[in-house]
Image (tube, rainbow, N blue to C red):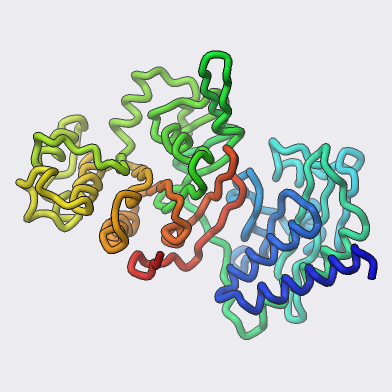
Length: 406
């Protein structure tokens, strides 16, 4: 058997197994897309989905890309994605420079496309959308055989949907609070330059719970520090509610942090010579309209421990004081850097349950974690690798803190 034919059948088998073992439609979609990328030697892909609440456009359902596709959409019949959905015919561009497509260029702004395949995503009951797969310039280009294989694999993935299943619809984000465009961060150590962030593009939305997930050293904490105004990008654009902070002075960043951002640290960072209430009062003095410190402690279930010093509190209780301290400022954004890393499982769940209530109250929460199980609580999960966003996952049914197991 020819090697390419053998690989083709192996890929089909992987997709069938993925679909059979998936507990949710999300898992079936995500797993199938990863297999398609791997077997087509592609680098990026997007599932464009026909949302019943918006019959004229296709929205991104899931993607693997260093770009944030959340705000993108395609009108049916227009551009490569819209044409493929309307015609139900695959479009294949072997050399993108010779056949540029304006919609694809807009979608992947900042990425030089080498070649592209766009395949209808349909089953026997309905047209679900389409899947767009690309390679970047300088790497291999797709062939007709790739397009044929992709068609079959996408058809198999579409079989995860039956007419009797309740389909999940794309997550509709709210107002953009923070926008990051091509964010890079370099650190100089003598003649050695270390590139920690290598072009991050991300919008953060009002009221969402976003996690930055990845192994140590992938750049997630550096990105969190830039979002919180504790650090500045070497290059790129950072805006908050439309205001450009890319070249802000230290005074402007200090005011931005004071007025808009609450911080929850892994190490608690409480003042040891102040009791719980006094730790909160200290932060309250920095803002014009703080929350009452006793009210904040009550929100985290520590009203009875307000007179205790940090040394008289357990690790979980200290972290809850840290959360209350962040709430005192009434911030628009709360940043949490590995808030449960120093805690045992049971205490972690207690702390995460408190953070769950904060999100339900309407706050925007951005959490750094290396624990994939914790990321199930988030609206969106940004997977980071080597200083870049690798893929974005949307949890349409967020897990409760008490559902997590690790």
